[in-house]
Length: 268
Image (cartoon, rainbow, N blue to C red):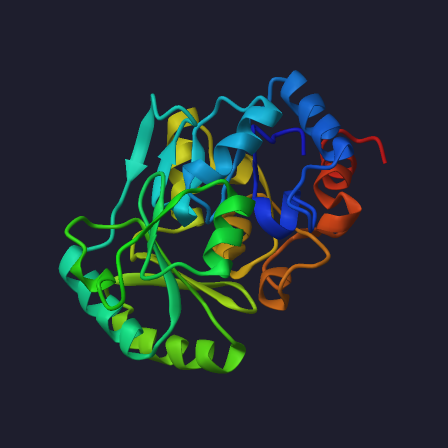
């Protein structure tokens, strides 16, 4: 653990509690790590608009991994290390197929997302995740003219399974992962938190074995597998726990703070 030179933390289900807040104990432990001169950053499926608040709360000035690794930049976008958009033609075709399945999905750009129509679900999501949206009209999402950064599908488990099967034929173009029991995230094929970690390691002149990372979901698997100290919170998916080397309490039990305390700060 003396060789840890960077800490990377997922947000939802990992650092954040179920009310989408950072517990004071987690914040305190992160600050102690920062005071040791070890950089701390975030790796999330969220975009910057939904991530910026937490980075500012934690005093993070390091480049953040957002959109599952499609984008790596500082919260003010003054340093952009990576920005990989989805291929436009293939994305438009995929959106058409999702529309045919009558799915609820959102198409994301840097600071906002698109939906086909107004709904209470969209309103609640926008408020909860601090990101504005635009309405384009029914069956109009496939008419986008600019490549997006991510598509998220939110549906019942039964319909989500049909979407999952549909997406298998698109594996050459898109990275597909489950971000929850009711959600699927779609990004460009090259977008991956593990790949983004490699970019950050090059930026800092370190090796992945010198990184401590925390995660809970399918989109964290390659991050946790690659990090020298890959830590799964107790509420993590079984497939993530299978690749983790270390374990900590759940997001509701301040697992990140306790993991930092146990494995890095050596006080418990």
